[in-house]
Length: 212
Image (cartoon, rainbow, N blue to C red; front, side, top):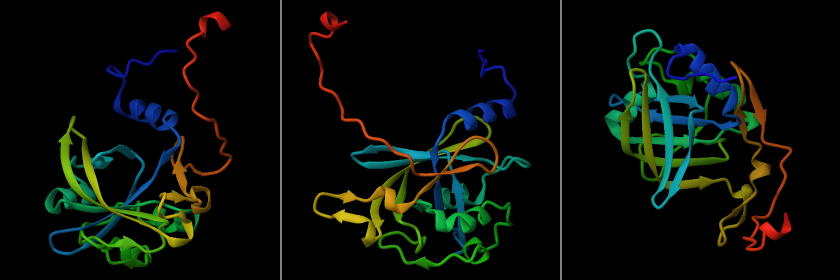
């Protein structure tokens, strides 16, 4: 069956993307308003998109009622700084608590009972329990369509907890031990980062036609 994404109503487009592009990593984004109010919010329209410079992308949907930017986007646009924290199983409930539609004056870090640590080069805090945190600055922001802002952020500093670093000189990390979680199909569905398998990248076979 084909779905014409140009003609489908918005809820149907969202459901198709949300239910098929899985699993998706979760960016637990911490920001500061210009008044110094702390904000923490999870986003799963998120991924890494480059390494020179090291770049992350956030897809930030606007408010469903009034169409304005949510706190995370507003803060990034105003200050140019944010931290992307990855989410482990132990932090799942606190992360989920940050998804509430809270008033902008609320300190969501305090509301969710989150322990923080100071960042090195940006003002928003790190989430202290996160296995990995990326301090970022805004490189570009694109308003594409009426209800979304796409943010490209350069990673300035990466924090990885010591227990997950296998060999710092070679930048080897123990990803399975982090017990990261991701988003999957439908509202409220998550998955654990397990049941992995490995395949070596093959070399090109110039005689592949003869082997058919």
